[in-house]
Image (cartoon, rainbow, N blue to C red):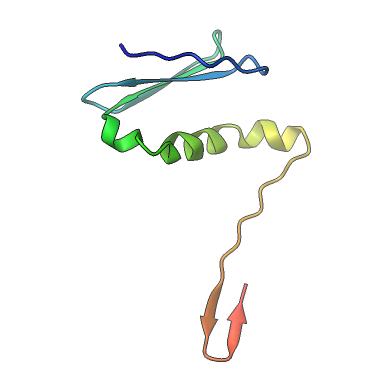
Length: 81
């Protein structure tokens, strides 16, 4: 297992390891998210960033931080948000 550590102040951590199959497990006691999968699926870091954002949504809301999602498209001469 290829594990690199970068501690955070929150006590929570995400550990990524390369593997043939994709698997995600959360250990509540360790406050650790273990992500295993092919390097090609995680190389740009976006998958982990979006996964983390989703998993911490409830905690952020409890702290008074909300997420706003929006969509925009344009119909000729009309912009819709």
